[in-house]
Image 1: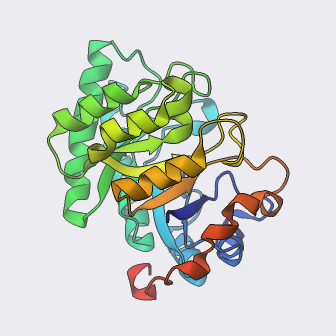
Image 2 (image 1 turned 180 degrees about the vertical axis):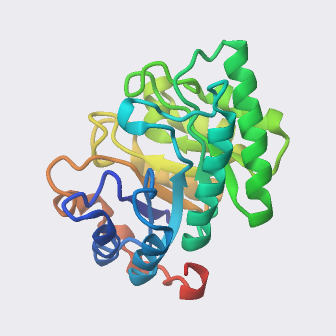
Image 3 (image 1 turned 135 degrees about the horizontal axis):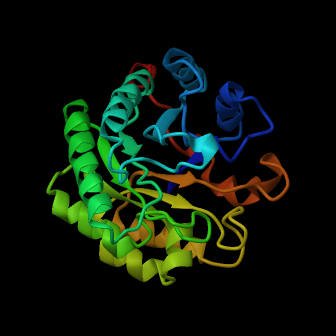
Length: 269
């Protein structure tokens, strides 16, 4: 049975960010993820996580100036120093939360541009090598062009090629089923083909990026496939509730945290 992590950047937004941890715990989640924690001190985030007896499943490396439309800088030539400083910043939050997976956003760039490809490969190598001594995986996520036009990494097979080419055990694929449905379709087939590379899974309905109970993909079947494949990580709920977060959790009732052990606080402090 899959284990789910609430995405606190999209869910529980009825609460202030640091209050969302307890709200997610009270709703039955055993883990959380979010886009970025950097507006809050690392110690505050760690305390909120521990207070909810939650595990941190994932967050992103610093993305550049998100408020001005930047969506990562890994593939942007000339931003190498800023990218490397961002990795060090993320590590401080990783230590405070115990997270073992960090996603590297590529940025807006032509995927066929040689300079962008070289910058991306260099960023990948630096980040993976910086994270490896801490037991942290670096994740690469393809993002569909409807939600993020011009994104450098917009194809699952190309992302898989970067993972393989890296030749590092801690570089893995972030398999968001929502993005896969919009880019390729046949989520089950793509998951089977790429599963050996997968380090994290995320979900949302293809219709509006809402709760995973709408039209496409077939989540009950995909949850069964994850069990069949032996996936034991968290499934990130990276969706926007249609009405309210709690009102939309009917799909989640069979998976509430009472079915799973709570983490050891020593592992998340």
